[in-house]
Length: 362
Image (cartoon, rainbow, N blue to C red; front, top):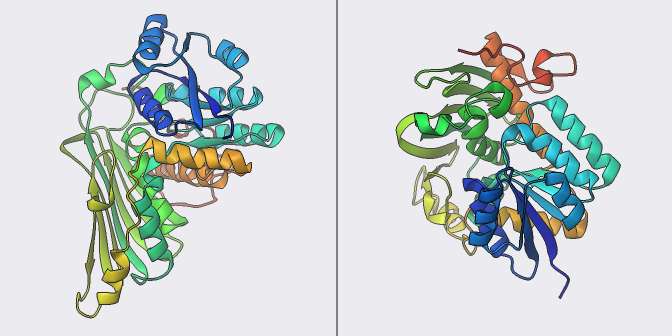
């Protein structure tokens, strides 16, 4: 058996537990050897609870001492780009929580270091990696459901005042946005994964309830390169929480309803005519063994990319596509004009920061 990959975690908040479970799902291939947090007691308590051998408070020291193969980054967003770059410069790959960075300019920095070091950074987008999603996407690409026509993409979640009382949350400088970047990003990325390249976005954002700098609602209308149209809503003001995606194709409606993770039973297919479309339903029902949309599912593909030396599935141009979409959504919302793919280039104020300089404190 090959020696397991040495892995470290930075950030021991709630999402850190998901990374611990992911590593534990790959015994013999992944060895979580250390974790880091600026709070020494929290770091040690986390390591003790999680069975991690060593705790650190200094990220650079952890990289130097542990010489990991992979760094799992679960620190606050403002640290993501620099931590990813430091990991690669230390000889490690990085799997970083969303949002990966604050702008296309920061993503350029990350990709420049990838070229220099031969290491890669990927964004955590676990919605892509469920086995059921792979099945549905293959049927879509094969034309089983006919041409996609209309999509609905809703992330209707609720966050209270205590959630936003965490110092880095709710601020442009440290969270980069509201539910667009921190909650709805997952389902929007999932939609992009299924429908392919987008061509134009028109959007609005608003703050309807929370006393925060950033938006707590965003809405967008998207045109895709294949001609499909999509309606997107991202919210942290919705008491009955739901994550919902619907694709209306020529021959069937596909629906996915869940909250934070899904399995094959969360999908539904409604054909135009169940009798005529018996073959369609037969293909639909051929789901592979169920792998849920977890961090573990994504970690497995990340390790496979490391072994092959190839760009990870949510790195490179894929990460860029999602970051560009977020940027375009904000630019449209702040300027009141539609934004086309590829139009945001160096020199554009939105190229350097999601809010393009329009974000102001309340």
